[in-house]
Length: 122
Image (cartoon, rainbow, N blue to C red; front, top):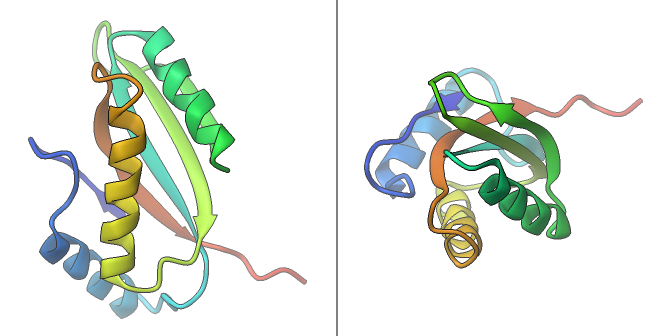
């Protein structure tokens, strides 16, 4: 499940509700933990490393940091396994993420998120 991002930092609650509806229609059990990936862009690897270190101290896993798709674009991908059971829970979570990142480096742009079903442990 992908989400993209326009001019605002976070998604509207209505957009999140639509994404949750799509995931539910695909058979996802939203009461269970998902692997949530979050993407950030900057022209500075140093700025992204600042954000990566901060988010790692809050339990996020660094998935990728390096060259982005566009010239002079750098990309950061971090993930977190968490149960965000309702659209409101995701909306509040994303708002907190915005506050964390904005307080560290304003030259970093949020680029969206993905979600993956967590495999059952055997």
